[in-house]
Image (cartoon, rainbow, N blue to C red; front, side, top):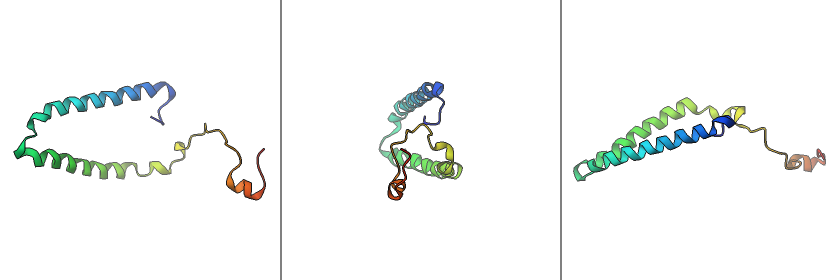
Length: 92
């Protein structure tokens, strides 16, 4: 959401809500299959799948935190920084 252009933020929210609706629909479909003999796999299968997905996600996206475009340039200056106060130089 933070990286979306201003005109597409509503589209990003709409896609997010559509995914949540799909998730809820799938949950309603699979609820009858969660019974005593299948109870282990009802929790183990998603756990295994999400563990593998987490590894793949980290491999593909671990560099994103290092990129400079995540720093928003729209922040207003709140005053001189701590190092400027110690040196006695401020931009005021």
